[in-house]
Length: 228
Image (cartoon, rainbow, N blue to C red; front, side, top):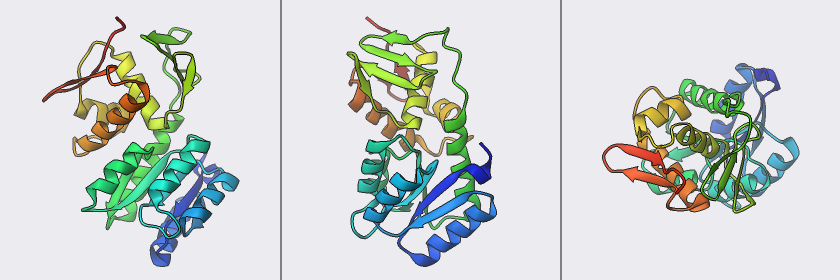
């Protein structure tokens, strides 16, 4: 998929910011549509079927967290969240409801475009060779080629980044991976500045797949537990 085939939905109620983001993304070759409030964002996501959503937290109608919940409930589209620099609560909740990454305001357009492309690269990665079939871990069945997860026979909805994190831990089952390693392998980040992003996604996986699946090694990182 080329960038001019990549559809981006920008959800931002401040017209100046919305237009600046849309214009920059269009100049970079993306197809862009804009929504200015919660309800219209959900409707545009349903009709436009974007490949990624750039989503502000503070919106009229209902906020970006609720937009993220509703959009993710319909289809697993990547979400890049825009949040205030000092609003850690919204950031952590946003990652918990399905956002894949975040950019804090004020941000540079260069940073925004770089983060957006990094999220898209993760989504478009070819599946790892898993030996030809689904892998079982306890009551989980993970099909890396189909990007599907089942627990006790029922399908579990994971966001693209949640799935990539699970797949990374699965490939390294029994090995403790540091947050820095996970950021590099899953998020394509070369530095360790986003440790809370890792922690929030681990919490989301535990909530969906069971608290006992991923072991925390304090001061080091995380490990996927082998099946008992």
